[in-house]
Length: 402
Ligand code: GLV
Ligand code: MN
Ligand code: MN
Image 1 (cartoon, rainbow, N blue to C red):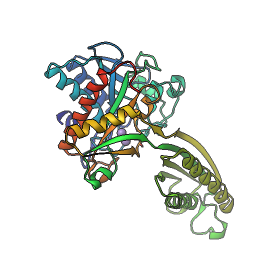
Image 2 (cartoon, rainbow, N blue to C red):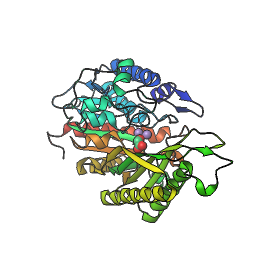
Image 3 (cartoon, rainbow, N blue to C red):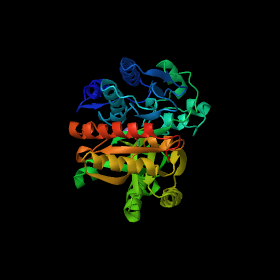
Image 4 (spheres, rainbow, N blue to C red):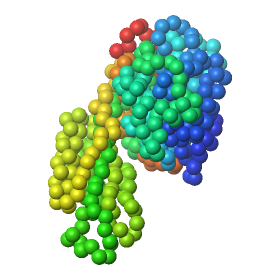
């Protein structure tokens, strides 16, 4: 808990939250602090070419059992998203060391670069590159929302490491994370055994119309990108409600140009975040959105172009890990349920190369990506203990843990 509160001091914002967008000065300061803690525990620390940091407790033999998450945040983030998973990993190692328990395999704690995707798209960039899902050359050229490249920012903060990617796959991977949704709290359940992560589709939409005088231009003669941005936002909400189930759609960002009170805008730029646990339904949602964009462009006489920012299919975690988390939770006297994740996570990338899974703990009022994010110390202790026992059990197992 002390480490969580200390890390949250870096980039702290009003309301108790954090602003540590990936590869900013605040992210660098957070990285430096976590690495100092890794050294305190005697871990061997490496930084790879995309800036992922891995601390290894080099005991036992074979490939490490890995845990971890991210320490970057959205600009209006909380203390727990990502940070909990990294610091709980350190706590697991410290607890085992203090109790003279040596696992049969090395244990590794990682924090991955730009999990949030709030500054550079796609999200989960560091873990994606780590598992070979994107060539490093391509990742380094990605441009942020403020115009800087990944390469330049990694170099500027001194986290352009030497360890190559793709990396050698760990033996297995498990991540503790806050739920970031309301289900566990509403059902009064302490632990989530996470079954997988829903698919995600991000795109940027640029609408070009005709800038003109707000007082003199008759409504019938307007080519108004602000109106079209609003129509798209309403359509996404209606689409998600109509499809039901796990379908969610969000317009999180709308920029108008020139953004002045008495000017019909020339341009609107908005982002669409569309997610579903079912790949076929996600494809259907994307198709309906694309059809709507074509229709509204013609009706309102604007030009619309789109740029994909992220696209990941739904991920299923390993049954071995899901069931292990469920069993350990019960053994420790906790209520537990199976559940999918609505948020993206580094574990979904690690799932491409080794048996992987996640443990969820409650988020008060289901609030996350918000300074008010909160998880109780009791829940954090429960989740961290399940992480500890999961990692020990994974370290006992043979080469395959599928
Ligand atoms: C990443 O944190 C996301 O799910 O938006
Ligand atoms: Mn997270
Ligand atoms: Mn997040």
